[in-house]
Length: 126
Image (tube, rainbow, N blue to C red):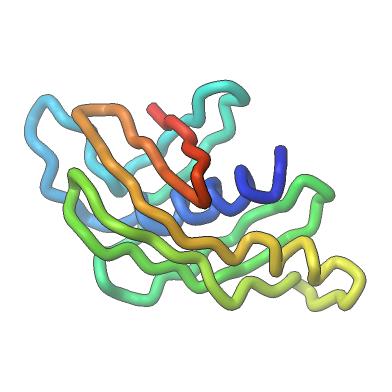
């Protein structure tokens, strides 16, 4: 998994944990999602719109990171940002892996497909 995919994963995890208002045939944004291609799972069930959320992730090299995560928008579209990512416990050698997760982007959700866009790339989650 590349650094941007890790960033997408973290970002997705943060905004998917919020309460949502999806319709009966639509998956809630703040649900558990699986990324196409590698089946990575993202649990966003504890996230909320417009508040400080915390995202805990593992990078490709196994470093555990915690980040601030924000989601602004609606169930159908919006923006997200992972910032202030640090290694837990702090380790100067592993810290660059966490800093690489600091990303922002946009998302769209249609029914039960979530697409996240970061720096010209996208990831699809179901």
